[in-house]
Length: 268
Image (cartoon, rainbow, N blue to C red):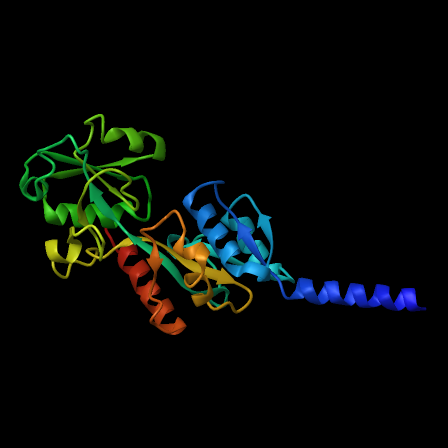
């Protein structure tokens, strides 16, 4: 009888412990930004973290969010909520905004001509590389060509994008993470003492713009737990900062919806 009671108590304790843990969904390329951000979340949860649920893509991740009996959370690229696409989430699954990294306009250190802001603003022949994103490239192009109508924007896949700048194929590139390349302007507040997009073109709709994440899940998790963790302060992607954290969830969702609509209205 005693042995049975111990077994029942052990099973009950395990069940309660599992119920108190939160799993983190991984749904993107291993080692990429999305993947790293989900690892930050998992590490920030500490003893509350259960396990990783690894799926192939955002469609599979959406299924987990909609059907999981256990508690699950994940970071969610904002552009997935644009328009009518398979990865759109029900608003009830969007817990809050998460992080944002302003886009940086960088150049190759040996390109002395490109180091001049006047060159970016007035040159009659200039090429700027951007990431080949159907969502982000159009607003970036709109901003750049408002700055200088002579700018030609070229969209690149990741690997050739890394080599285009040092090869001289392009004059500048627009990135979330500048790495070792010098920064000439940033579309948002920054720690580079670089001119901002709003200073370059006041009131331009895409002057303040960055790659961003939402925080999604089927359970309430205070995102401040993540922001205040060692995992967040020691993360690799240092340009990512808390996004709209001062706003209520309703205000956040309204602001995101407005941004998505504005980008969606660009004549592509």
